Image 1: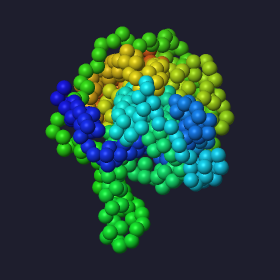
Image 2: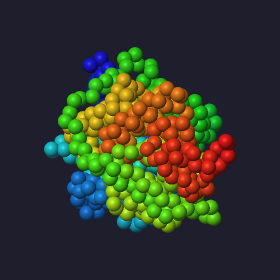
Image 3: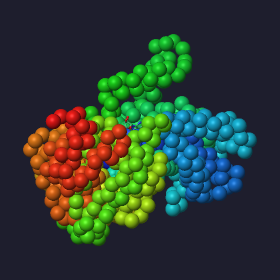
Length: 587
Ligand code: ADP
Ligand code: MG
């Protein structure tokens, strides 16, 4: 209860606002509310998802013009105006997202700039939208016979919409889909390997951000009761981004802080700067530019985390994971079943042949080690098997099915769990949540039920599974620690727990012992023996000979992209070709 006091005080002040404040402040708060709705979308898109959009003002414009046009020229209901705006916005966002989100990082910002500029000019040049003068005579909103004709009356609608959006966004982020969204920032590779469709996830957050902007535009049009192109230009799009960044791009409440600070500051600067400079002009833009640079230099995470530190009550951390019925597991193949079969694999990078004539098998209930000197082509083989890269030629079969053309997400779905040579986790998220990403494909609830928190039963089962896997690997004590605070050895173990959450029958581990101390290596070997005894097939890519030799059932040795030896550990250890290649001919 105690940690809710700041929120309750804030809500009480908000609720009493219209009773106490003069008109000017009501107007200011209305605008802060409208801007916050847009900035909230950017928190999700940019702050959490790592995708930058300069074009949100254009989506606001779509929402405003859709309702403006339909309610004036066709005298339709504002509610139809809202629906039409949402429909058009969704269509544009999907097309824009489809064109740019699959490409690398810079295409989305560039695409949104182009979109922001062109829509602004389109609004200004279309005759039926009133050109640069815009549309007037937009009707007031009516709620159950209650006309919202003044700012004071409109106030509650804006803030209820905003707080609803904040709550929905918070709920969404605290869910299976939310973990997928938060995993985007760690680069798509890890998320995809855990079964997350990153292109879809990016499209979803782009769509949500656009729809939030559209709703803000709809409210704006009926509050202002006229629209023209000015508030929907690119420079306003940049201001929205400012708000999200200044407020604290990764925090939902940061949207409100950013919108509040910038709106008030702008108001104040527009009063004071022309007096200082002795002439009128948009001097506040210069000020905002400097402010943004300072925030990026001094307070990367914006003002919100700094504000939170000022408040004496600490937010309560979730400290328990409910006991639930376990998630269904796949039927493990019988020990000795061939899980993975690679035949005549060849991988070329331009003229460089990284893998050639490679063949190997991994069976259920065995540890197969792939070893070889640096640059031998082990990671390349590993990437082709796990669907991160595709072979130039050759075959890969997983559980009897040809898989050489499948992407990593599909390999996860089929029962392949993997870890990374360079640990890939989300350092500020808890150990538990990091591991729960691995269980992504074992849940099904989508964005809508997550936003409304109707998926709590499934979520509890996913978290409970994550805990079970963490206990299985011996990290049960660290469920709520920040993942980034663990020592490297435990981070590697965390990755194994995450891979186990995929419910795999084959585990691919790329240099799991790298950087571990002696005792940590022994603990890791013990864990892998335990998993093997439970019927897991393990493909181990390793550098550390001693580690491999004490653990592996069979060993394949690579050099220059090819297999030079294969057999039991004691056999390959004595193989003169291996000694020559691997140990440089040491006697
Ligand atoms: P290992 O994991 O055994 O150390 P790698 O599979 O990483 O070896 O590399 C094998 C060879 O392929 C190296 O010569 C490396 O430079 C090259 N290589 C690996 N990945 C790429 C890539 N994406 N593009 C070009 N060359 C690559
Ligand atoms: Mg490697």
